[in-house]
Image (cartoon, rainbow, N blue to C red):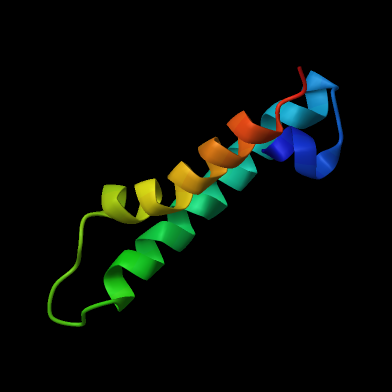
Length: 65
């Protein structure tokens, strides 16, 4: 996903970018999981899977053959 966003293939740039994008995604999923209900929090893996599943499906359908 990060490679498609950046259009970059150099690992010196891509590896730190993946770390940053992954951290931001995890932080956003954690914020969403805590904001849905104020008294309780839902597990972060539920929100992460709801975000990640469409991305994986999109990658599978758009892969070049």
